[in-house]
Length: 367
Ligand SMILES: CSCC[C@@H](NC(=O)CCC(=O)O)C(=O)O
Ligand SMILES: [Mg+2]
Image (cartoon, rainbow, N blue to C red; front, side):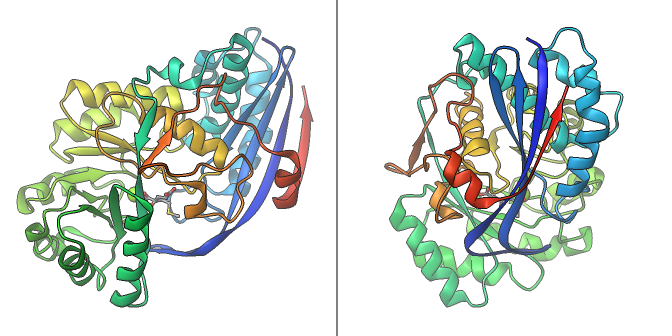
């Protein structure tokens, strides 16, 4: 397969409601899509970076720049192109995992499409549908939170994840537990706490949460291991897990008992599968995280979520959780599940007129 060109396309999709986390509030999703053209077919990739470097060091314009100046030329210089040599070809460049992931995803989609193989089959999926969780932002009141959570439960979501931060943690968790009983419930702090908050976080223990996600700073693996001795609720890592090697280290140090796998954060779906396998070998449950993906990234995430070690519902929500209109056919919750795409590659394609409506810029890089 020969690369003939790459399209960088920025899109901006309004959210159905503001989504507030400990690092800020999103009202629209600005993101970068890639379309890779080869001599045989084309493939689509989605870059999970936010518009600003507030979740991780990457951001949309930085990802576009590193793809344009370094990653795409490095790939174009390769004689043989297949998804397994994208990682090695790009390893000379440090970091920029979400940008690398988007390029690998597009090459993987093109290659699998040409072979007529689905991403789910390529990754080793064992399910044809996946149970879905939903991520709930920080709200301005407990009443509004309970109304939103009740709505998601009515829609059939099987697990509720509450964003928390200092000042919005024990009270909302207690209120949800008291109102909705023994639902599957977890929290995500996005690094908002420090080890000095251990006693505060231990006050979440009576609520039988599935996990506390990324309470401390991304680099604070030792801190998470110390926190794990002081709180009963399992620690789950997200931002800290950037590769299979870092997952093995965190598990060995006792820093986590659960892992949120986000393919973009770790450099791609192939590394995501390696993390899945490392965690399975250590008896560590995993689930597929989300970055408010369009239907393109959502389709690929659902394929990952269908792997055997993904034993907890992921942040693989329906398209309508974030968007009035997706750029692909919408993913619609059915009995609390989403179907795993079965078509070749990621199994979905953008709908041209819908994609054009949200496109803010396109750039064609001939190779
Ligand atoms: C804008 S917040 C993105 C990162 C966040 N993602 C979610 O909360 C799930 C988002 C989704 O449902 O795609 C996380 O830290 O897990
Ligand atoms: Mg998280």
